[in-house]
Image 1 (cartoon, rainbow, N blue to C red):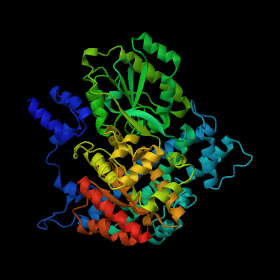
Image 2 (cartoon, helix red, strand yellow):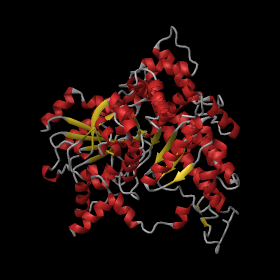
Image 3 (cartoon, rainbow, N blue to C red):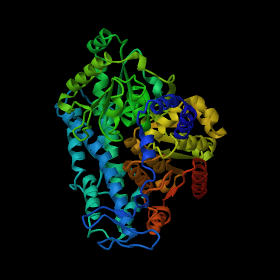
Image 4 (cartoon, rainbow, N blue to C red):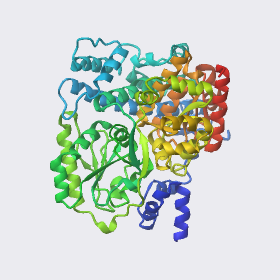
Length: 627
């Protein structure tokens, strides 16, 4: 039996540090995502091809991919339209999720500006003024709260259709904006594009697959250059713009002798005040009175990335580590907000003493303790949650605690501002390194963990291959955490890079992969590309740059990849979207889009082959630029 379990564990993950915990889940019949994926086999072929339509009560309808059965749904939609409808629906859901995250940050920002929130302040007032000037707000002779109020009102208007354009699109190079205008995909309002997308997927509206998917690009741009960019910029103003920081990562960040609180999800608004509460001396004393040495906070997924970037809080892992963290028996409370949270978490927690604490009215989870969070009483709620974690610690069974490893060192905090600071206050050294060929180009690698791919295999191997080719990687989300767990986010990892990239990294004492933040912080990659393109007087599509999402699963990741492509990045994904039921849609995405936005998607599950494809593209871009 142990041999069978060992084989299964090896098939599921490349992370040696998590294998012990994974074996425990199999030995003790603690169900995880990998078990549920196995139980789902074979998965629906119609769904994987995108040719199942459940949009109305005349259906559900399926189109026969072998052209022997029905070729149209009851309404008359063929495979091309059904695939396009489903894809646009996913793009809209992804844009809505990140942009609604941005709305919550904006609402907290606005309440803080008006003195109506609890436990928040405008920490980075320099960035407040810089962003205000970017969007045409007068700052001279005005208080920070006055500037913030006007900014909040101006950004709230961007969720509708008051102005007809998004302020942050002006950060894109003029040549990129010309492409958007010519293709009629310039985003007009964040909610406007999402609502229109949902209108178009209704039966009897969108019928042309190309027209549908071009709107998908516009909706995605409304997220990348709108909702997500607002989330990033306003979080920086509220909680501090990230600076380069050292921390640790993996399940070894949990501490046997401490009250362990895991912060999981995507929104930093609650987690920031939980950090403050956990440092309250009265609560620390309570923890010690309960027998612990103190309170240990660790992050998971993108809430963790937000805290890592700004406060150096350690990371327990990425998305597929959430059940494994509970399975160590060391977690006293897992605080969840929303997105990428398994509804199964309370079932795993029941195997131990752990409490799962939900906090969002949008994401109530059966079996979790619900402590609803609102900005006006944020700190009081955070105190309650930390006290509950301390009480839960008293119920912990030390015999059931199995922390599998020691933590791995990592360096993070590479906001656009931090990168510029590391370069000496200008992007010129980076541009010089690119034009000289020491760095061939830049790749933004993003996205999720997916149990269909051996855990972290795609992220880590793509990173290693591109480093060897002197290509600098900037990463966010689960991709960055995977690289951290593999020991690639430290300056010493530069020894694995090619000669040119290694020289640059060693001269600056930085890793060969730069952790830029959470998945909404893919907007930082857009901003960095905009800075470089403006400096070179080119569009983003002309840069020696590309995007990648080796292990994506979420609708949000599809939207990120879509706004990367729409912005001009050739983007390679490790799994195809559910579009292979339509050759015409597939051709549009992987070929014909290049005639529209000068970029396209590619699909390649093998990270070594994907690295070669990306390198070819970057070398071609360099040749076009004459460098």
